[in-house]
Amino acid sequence: EIVMTQSPAVLSASPGQRATLSCRASESISRNLAWYQQRPGQTPRLLIHAASTTAGGVPPRFSGSGSGTEFTLAISSLESEDFVVYYCQQYDKWPPVFGQGTKLEI
Amino acid sequence: VEMVESGGGVGQPGKSLRLSCVGSGFSFRTHGLHWVRQAPGKGLEWVALIPYDGSKTFYADSVKDRFTVSRDNSRNTLFLEMNRLRPEDTAVYYCAKEGGPYFFDNWGLGTLVTVSS
Image (cartoon, rainbow over all chains, first blue to last red):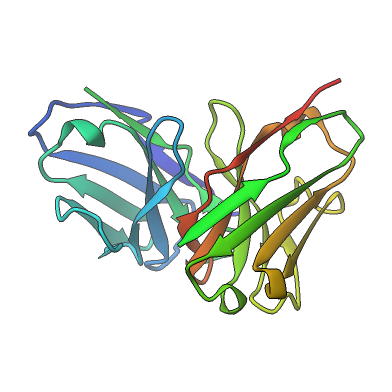
């Protein structure tokens, strides 16, 4: 089973700053990676799939990049509602596996 | 798109619970559907998949031989039969619709399952 490792576990930033979240796969997953956002007490929301394709309704400040084993979620100018938890998920190899999450805090 | 789970609650170790998920606002019968769970304060764990036609089922090792996923396309409903419950099955269970093979573009609100005596 592929292991997905997100770093850092907690990222401190300020509104208006740029944030970069990392996700590493234990073996190559091509570009078959998704990013989800989860607000406290809420359901996960798809942000990005295919490593860099933004899901419908997602603000343009969110972008994804990477391929193989190294991936990045960037948030260009943080807004207060962005300070929540983010998960990456690989879907290249069976079974689907999530990273442990990165908490973005003010 | 809306997906609404039900059936959660408190189950005793070794006993059973059955979860349901009703989907609307999309072509239910043409999408693969998954169950994903989240233990309290923890991350997301994929649990099970059933393709659009229910022809096969797939499970995480942690639930294999205990959980059974099924669907009734005539009622736009997904099910998860959970047998031989363990305390480590305690989690919010989400149903999730595939946006493409094996990633999830719509999730239900979740239903909490607590396994405790």
